[in-house]
Image (cartoon, rainbow, N blue to C red; front, side, top):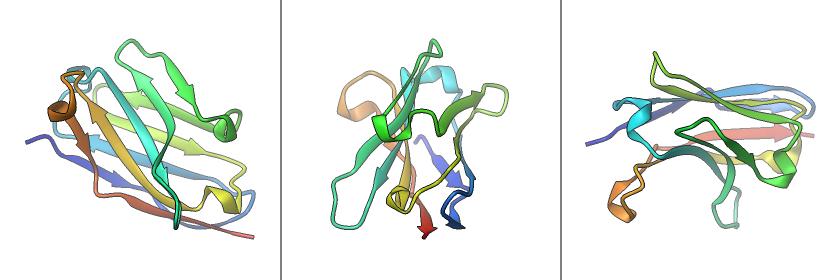
Length: 118
């Protein structure tokens, strides 16, 4: 069973930074793509950033220029560096890993809370 363990969430003031980490029990290259999703209170979970096996990245418009997704292949860890945080970035952040085999190959972490105060 694939395990994803997130860390790095917390409480930060607007304008501050946080770095989220997602350590996986599998080699990163086992996955077609990995990403970070966010679920704000009362809202649907949305994709914030993703990185493909080949290293291509994509971001939700609100994260462009402020967030950076990266990975350390040797540590089998994916990161989300979040700068210039805003109160609307508040939510539970989930790490996602997709093996590209359909729903049976999609895995989620337990989530980490990010709270940005104004």
